[in-house]
Image (cartoon, rainbow, N blue to C red; front, side, top):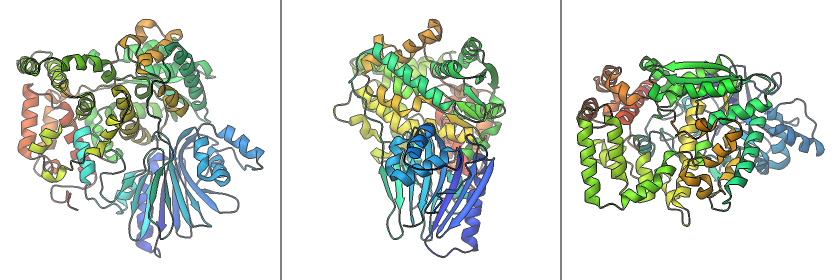
Length: 633
């Protein structure tokens, strides 16, 4: 795992351009503290920082072919590099070392862009063809590794993190309204837009090409196949998926440094640990984050799995005072980012990095095995939708009145009221409404600065939910795989782990497994309405039935409770302080409304308040204030 920066100069360089490049390279050194290399070839400058995992003495980058025609900077891991190396050796290639970087470079030399389909891994890389003076960048299938793009009149810049372009002065700190609208609804930025107007992002499964005098071109080389009902036999899927997951875990255990496992206590991370223990040649290290409040704590389940497989188990307990790291999280997140799980993931990564350099995680299991509650609740919502609208309205009013009375179940009652309200929507609209965890569109129109409202329907790719011939649940799965997985889940894991120089590998994101599960019908994935049926059934030989078949809990932070009690003063101080940048987007009187309703228990604004807090901290990290917070074109 690494990071890199590239600049392609269109004009003669000067001391200022050299300063910008040096600042960009220095800003991402946390991604790779083991080695640093840079080179200048014609119009190109490349800098690379390395976290050494494979071939600790080799693998120095930037790397070139012997004839100097191709130069590469690479971030990630190619898990099947040994197999590809064998193919290349049979074709006459002679290797100087054992790194996957050299294999990738030779594969590009041999097959060009076609080599991408041979790769099993997580990656972003850029290749400079010195003879043609062209560059090509490519991103992995599901978006595990990031790449930012900025083109100015003087140069083209590519970087592993947005902060490299921000601190160097290349990024113009004018907010992109599309990106801001995405954040204010979903809680994260989606698609090819970044939060800064003149910086873009390379999409998952895409390549970027550039040659002097031509326009940048971004085009797909891979997209996850849309879910179908091709396979309807759950028992056959149990064996096939288990074989592929086992092989994926085996491949991702290959390293020249110690490897551990994230262990939440849920089914996905437990599956990874169980399968890793089968093939590991030493006891594994397992790492968990929990809460003092038992309602949110899955550590007891994590302990069951760790003990069963003799893993050395390390734990961290998250407390309200843990928010002291939020300014660092906001900086490392690169863009405004409101996934609450960033907080436990930060501490989990910090804990893990003290013991190992690589960790396996369970990310991706929910997206391909139908693990989210939306799959289970779909049928119930459809039944509620058939109720008369006046009856639904009465139920919503009664629930909100009960919540306002201040019972211990106020938050649960408010969530139930919202679910009944949403049940009146069509399936795709209902799903998108639930994804708007910060604010709904109607609230934004009434309460947020007009310049923050870029109401472009496709900013979060909802057209996937209207794909002809797709089952409603298949459309939801496609959206999760192509939008929330790369832009929320994997963004969070990459930034929080790399802030601590920790490589995280995700066995559930082996493309062979994903493609198999997208051919499985939802009848097979959810036998008897049970989420993640195929995976749970496959694991019955590894884990107790009562462990496997309990209801999914999820990585939930009790922010709504903290914001009413321990963190109420902290939150008010940040959002209502004179000059707070967030007041340039959400007026102070609206902030006071949100804080007041949340404190009284009449509405649960926990997710929205968290998002506004993270936006304020992000603005502070980038020197943005009410005065210079620009949304103008």
